[in-house]
Length: 207
Length: 207
DNA sequence: AGAAAAAGCGAGTGATCGCTCGCATTATAT
DNA sequence: ATATAATGCGAGCGATCACTCGCTTTTTCT
Image (cartoon, rainbow over all chains, first blue to last red; front, side):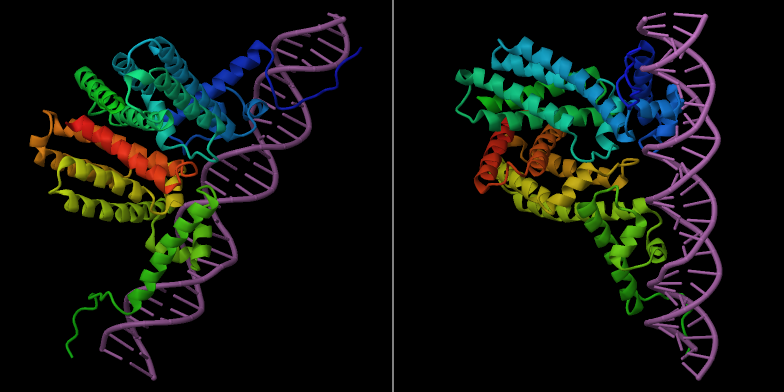
C-alpha cells in the first residue's frame, strides 16, 4: 500500500465534519466576545461553547490570536463585500449621488452586527497591526482614489490621494461614531439627517 | 501643647516620598506600554521598572486597570489643557480662522507622545467605557457646540449639536489617522496641506 | 471487511499574573 | 527618647490560561 506518511500537522480541514468544527469555533469566538467580553474569551471557553474540545481547537487554529483574527477577517469580509458592490454601483454616477450612496453604505456596513463591531473596535488589543486590516484600509483608500480620479473633471484641482485620505477618514469616523453612540442615534430620521449632512460636507469639499 | 487630634494629615514632608512613588509608577506604566506593549505590562514589571515593590504599588493603585487608567487620564489631561486654551483663544475669531486654529491644535495635540497615543488607541482593551474618557469626549463636543452657537449668524441654519458631532468626528479622525500613519505623513508640508484641506472641508460645511 | 488517515477528545502541565500579608524601614509627634 | 504612624518591601498564594499529548472515534479508501 502506497500510503502517505502519517503527516499530522495542525492544518487544513478536508472533510465536511471538520469544516463545521472550524465554523463553530469562529462563531463561538464571536459570540463570547460579544456576550462576555474579551477578557472572558479563553480558548477553553471557546471550545466549550463551540461544543468541541480544546484539542480540536488547536488542530485548526495555532493560537488564540488566530481565532480572534478569523473573527475580525470574517467581519471585514462581510463589510468589504458590501463596499465593493457599492463602488461598482457608483462608478458611473456623478459625485453628489455617488457620495450619498457611499455614505449610506458606510453607515449600513458599520451596522452589521454592531455589538461585534463595538467589541472589535474597543476591546481587542491589536497586536502587531494585522496585515489583513491594513489591506482592508488600503483597498478602501484605493477604491475612493480611483473613483475620484475618474471624476476629476467635476471637481476642483486636488491631489486624489490626499482627498481620499480626508474623505475616508471623515466618512468612516461619522459611521463609526454613529455605531458607538447608537443609543442616541437610533431613530430613522436622525440617520437620514446624518447622511444628508455628511454628504453635503464631502461634496462641498470636493468641488 | 494641646495637639489637634492625630488625624490632621499634612501633605508635606513624608508625603513627598509617596507622591514620588505614585509618579514613578504611572511613568513606569507608560514607559512599559510604549516599549514592550500591553501584553508585557504586568504589575510586577511595572513595580520593577518604577524601582518600587509590588506591595507599594497596591498601596496606591487598587488594580492594574487603575494604573492604566491613570496613564490614560494623564495623557488626556495634557491634551485637554491644550484644547481648552485653544477654544479660549478662538472664541472671538470668525469661523475660518477659528477652524484653522482648531484643526492645527487637534493635530498637534494628537502628536503629544505619539507612541503612547498609538498604544492607548490600539492595544488597550477599554473595559467598561471609562467614565473619564466619556467626559473627555463630552467636553470637546460641548466646546464645539458652544462655539458654533455663538457664531450662528455666520453660518447656515444648522442643528449645533449635529454639526458638532460631524465636525468633531471629521477633525479628530484626520488627526488620529495622521498620527497612526506618521510614517507617510511626516513632512512639514504635508501637515500644512492637511490642515488647509481639513479646514476647507469643515468651513465649507458650516456655511 | 479491514486498514489507515482524519477528526476529536479532555485531563493535565507549566507558566504567568494579579494580588496579599507579615514584617522592615523611615518619618513624625510627643 | 520613645511611641506611633506612614511608607516600603518581596516571597509566595491561588487562580487562570494557553496549549500538549496520548488516546478513542469516525470517515475514507481499497
